Length: 498
Image (cartoon, rainbow, N blue to C red; front, side, top):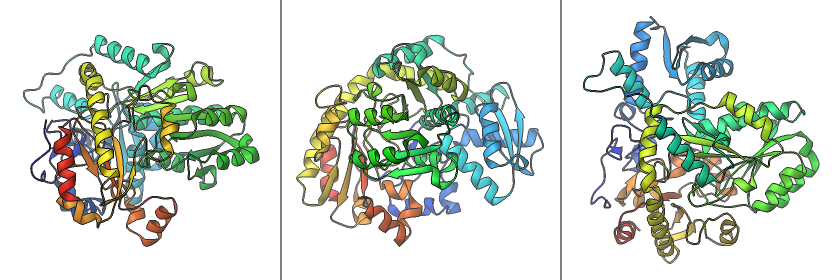
């Protein structure tokens, strides 16, 4: 495993596998054309991050279903379950969506209207409830539409092995407190819906977003919590005085707080003990997402009511499977109600995805150790380089003390480093030969112009850029996910671009 010697061509899957979850964006222009929905650019993408760009096998199966049910007058999507399809129907509008139930998944026909289809597409992106590429592949094969592909049966041992491992790494009391989901965002959505239902009985409907976080997490709050006034944004996750003031004033109205530990992309960690104390004091459910460093490196379950995380990162370190998990803290005052609620809202993963992730378990600790060692050295390089204005990572500034409270062992920062550059973004980005694409937590080093890929609506407008800067976020930051390649190669690739 080595750093590429030259740029990986646009639209090349990363890794080079049939179900890769990342794809190469070698130039900033490629990123901008994609974000502006340039037809020629999108036509080249057969594989990309699955919640944003449907895998070509999923599109093939949906086209087959469209013809089979004579739905040419509608856009067809295949969802994991009838429950998810009905959620989409409620969100988009009953008159715009036709639901066709099936035994293993659900089919929806969306009215061919640009605004309606955009709303449906955003629902699928935020909730992660579309069928997986492996399920689509099996459906195509079973229908005789895919040659040389054998449809396999579920493997109970793979499921049990994965769940046993997660229960141990998360620190849950029992396997029954850990729920596998078909994606990380599906886990967030299930937790959100469960808490929303529980707290509505107490007339609590407000949500607090603690710190800047991944786009689809806060979009779930934006789109499903109610009107805009139902979401409260606390900009700095390390300043809990602000949070305390809000809770003292209106804590009786707040249903939940959601926080990443650390946050994405600034890798900040709040004071976990104080945060839990404030949530308990005011009867607010606390949701924590440790995906940035992973449950291999941090222990956050003792400081939350619900843990949600993406297994697409670190656990599935080869970068070719989507999955997530929800875990419950057995000492939580919400435990009994949450257990029933999560079971109703969770979307289980497809059995071939489970098997794929289970096969990667034997190496996950070794990969995490190598990633951590490389991250320590690369962060030190950036912190001492004149071409880097700021380096954000687990131990940066005063953040290190708070991070170490949740760290499982010394020297376990996880893979994420975010840098602010002295030179123009495009000059650095287009020159650097590090693999460039979405996602993180792979055994391959990846980087991306994160705000362009996750928040293009903000970086493309001057007012949005100013808003980001007011939050302490450089619109031109580079997010890096450190991999297992020789650290000398990683550093050399960045050195020549800086």
